[in-house]
Image (cartoon, rainbow, N blue to C red):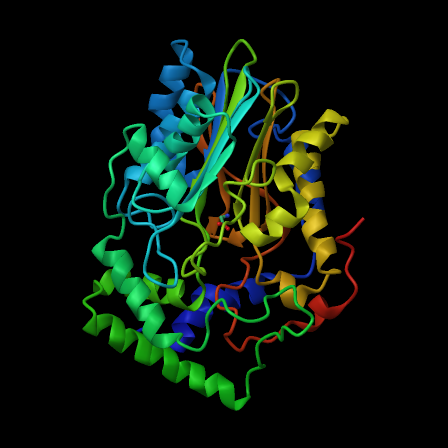
Length: 416
Ligand code: GLY
């Protein structure tokens, strides 16, 4: 299999340019309200919502909830699935490691009925950090433990230490390490005024990228990365993902809880905590209002306290959909509508109101054939496309020399 620059362009970049990144899908918000299959306004309970990588675990958790199981335990059943799955490289066992090749996990949870929370950050060697966050909530007087202390606490309460770095994730890390020795997470980030967007095509850099992808492909083969996974591995090297899973659950009594767990941004600096363990950013539950969580760019979500913002928006009367869209607008505002930066950021919110109304919203649509989705179970298990602000996917290859379309440079209408 040969992975050409053209191939990458057609699957990853041209799609976003061709579908037009120019306008927020404002009408989708209205359509969603009218669409009875996806009402985003009418409530039904019990109900569980999650990031789409939890969809296969919803049946079991929903049956547990229907049989009187606790709402937080139901949500934890969902996220434990991907944590245990060595092939899900966004969370738990097999998560992509930090820049030193060490897997560091983050998680938090909130239990609505008792109004309690627990959280852990930067935990090594313990797979089910979502359950460790619950243990912090139940067995300590603290809310958050990090690093070595969190690991020692987990072992003390009975979690086994194990190697979380699978062979596949180790090889992807090695591929990243060998090809990005000068392109890592050190130095000014995207929010720094000194940050520069990628060079335009036609520049000498564009040809260098062609060579770079070919050399990554050859090196991936040398490392023994399976041919069918090679393109995905190179994507992860060129655009480190920040995959995560969030889940919120509501029972028929109106009790509600939520949790979020992740291996965080791939190849991050050791010690980096994203939004997932931050109560109020990666997850927030208020028994009086509802529960919300996030996947996507952790740094951006922390700056808008996304989950808490959404809950407070709903408390003031916004629908789940309006509340989520407002949080996305705050991210757009933080970059003054600058699409040369926003095209490299993505964020999805999963929102559940106490009456069972829910919404999934994302900054970008995703690929048209693979849009961002929210998984739902309210008696029927399904995945639904999120309502999005911008058409197309966010760019997967920040340094790839893709032009910013002229339309994107105009003043936009995204910010209220
Ligand atoms: N949203 C996960 C992270 O940024 O760590």
